[in-house]
Image (cartoon, rainbow, N blue to C red; front, side, top):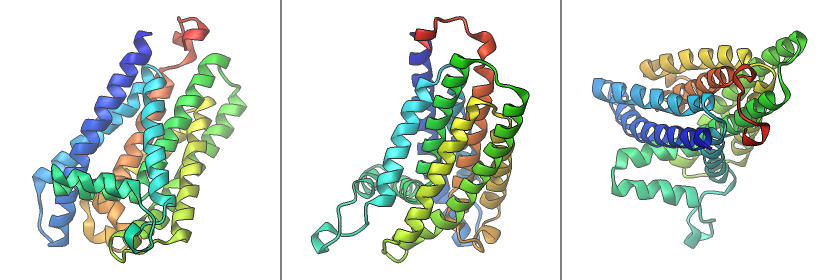
Length: 281
């Protein structure tokens, strides 16, 4: 019982601290980038936040319960942000609980509220959350069933990498367009919302494929992470992409760090070190 509790503490604390630092730092970084100035403190704070988020996902090396809970919360709020049409409930629109929650963070700091809004309404929360849930279930299944054949490992690695890169591409293109339509044009776009939900489904599938191998997710996640760092540190280039807000707010980095850390954690938490009864897994 110690492992599940410890993983929950690590995943929860790492996620809460990491998101707070990322939201605050990324918002300050985006504002400075918009004025063509630099804010080294905001950049460092964002990167530290991303590392803490990675540490939370890495808790899979301890147990799968922690990221299952954190991922489920991310996925639920991210899904609600995308599928509940945004609008003023007093003007004929539908009440958006996620928007109200993110706006409430403005009581503490407006930059944090802005970062949280972009995180949820861009679909980053959904993609990261479904991947964590899928990874938790996939690694748990691997531990219960045992090692896979070399052919299954090779196929799942290739498929996992392709699916994860596809999910990231849809996130950047459709998620970036959706969050812009919400925050800039104050308009709900069902098409980009639906495509972003598909990105979440693909990310969850990539997480489940960790059941057979983590190699593909590690490689694809590393590529996403490198691209995210580049987009974050090169706001001029990021502004030319449809997902510029994701790059400027460090959310591509967040997705990449989550993919890599969870996949590595799944590798560490392998069948070889099982010493607990199956019922305790």
